View 1 (cartoon, rainbow over the protein chains, first blue to last red):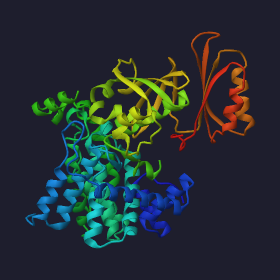
View 2 (view 1 turned 180 degrees about the vertical axis):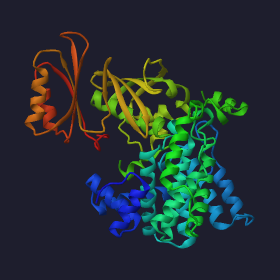
View 3 (view 1 turned 90 degrees about the vertical axis):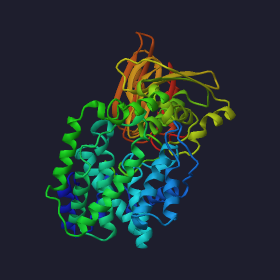
View 4 (view 1 turned 180 degrees about the horizontal axis):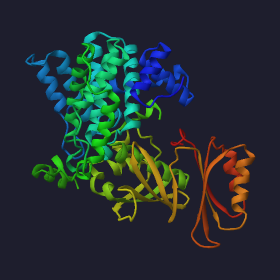
Length: 289
Length: 223
C-alpha cells in the first residue's frame, strides 16, 4: 500500500483495499514508521487513556500561572447537575469536557496535543461524551482517533496545524475537522461521509485568527475548544444525514492554507492584534509580560 | 509524518513550543554537560522572555535540566525539586540577534565543575534546534542519533573520529565542523542513521586531543 497526501488519495486507497478509512490510516502509518499494528494500536490506546485521565483528574480549584483561567469546567458541571441545561446531556457534557481539557493544559497538566496543545480539548470533548452517551467500547473510540489522525496528517501536509503560521483556523479548525471525521467513524459512516464532515467543520472556522491575550494559550483558546467540539458534532450529523460539502475537503484545506498565508502577522500568535490588542487584553498581557 | 506527530505528543501544557520544547532544551543541555547539573544560568530571549512566565517556560527548562521528560507531571514543581536536589539556577533575559523568537541561552555546570553554554530555539511542536555550543555556531536537533565531539583543532581529527563511527557500521547523514580559531577548539556534530552505542563514545573519547563526547540517541533523553 502506498502513501496519501490528500483526502481523495486516502479515500481511493481505502476503497481500493476494501478497508475502513481508519484501518487504512493505521496500516499506512505502520508501514512508514516500521511499527507493528499491535504496537500502533497500543500507542493509540495510550492517547485515549491520557485523554480520559486528564478529564477525570480535572481539579476545579486549579488556576493557571497567569491567573487568567481555571474553574470554568467546574461551573459548567454544576450547571449541568442542576438539570437546567438547555442543550441536553451530550452537548452539555461536551462543553464541560472541552473547558476542562483546555484548563488542564493551561494549568500544566498532562494532555495529548491533538493536533496542538492549544486545541487539545476538541477531540476528547467529542469522543469521551459520545462514547458515554452512545455506550461505545474503547475500541470504537480508538478507531475514531485513527480516522481523526488521518485527516490531521493531510491538513498538516497540505496546509498547516500551526497558529503561528496560519491562525487559529489551523489549530481549532483542524482539530474540529479531525473530530468530525471521528464522530462519523463512531457511527461506522463511510470515508466519503468523513471527508464531507471534515470539510463542513473546517469551512465553518475558516479565517479564525490566533490572537491570544498576553501570548498565552488561555484566552480565547480554552473556550474556542468548545466551539471546535460542538462544530465537529454538527458537521458530522450533517454528513451522516447525507449532506455534502459543495467544496470538496481537499479544496477547503487548500483554502485554509491560503487564508493563513494572507493573514497579517498580528493575527498569527504574536499577541499584537485582535483580542490581545483590546483594552482589557492588553491589561492582562502586560500583567504577564 | 507519523500520525503520532498529529495525535501527540503526550505533554504537560500549556504550549508545545514554550513548555514541551523548553523541557527538551534543558534535557539537551544536561546531556551536553554530562553528569548531574548543579548550577545553571538561563537567559531567555524574545517570546520566551516576554511570555515565558505564563507558559511555565522557566520551570520547564529546569525540569529538563533534571532529566524530566516533557510529559512528566512533576514539571510544575521543578523549582522545588531542584532545591531538594541541589541544583541552583538563576534566570535573566538576553537579546539574541538572528535567533528564532523562542530561544534561550543556558550555561550549565556539573558536579565536576565542567561547563557548557548552549543556545537553543523551539520553533514549535516540541521540537528544538541547538544553534550554538560554547559560543560556536552549530545546528542540530537531537531528533536523529547525534554525536557531538569537542576537541582541539588539529589535522586528522575528523578522519580519526569518523573512522571510529564507520568501523561500527554506522552511516553518517550529516557532518559539521566549527572552530573558534586555528589550533583552538573545534566542535564536530555528526548525525547518524543508526543508534550510537556507548563503545563509540568511549573509542572517540580515547583519541588524543578529544575533550568531550556527547551522544544523543532519540528515546534515551532522560538518561
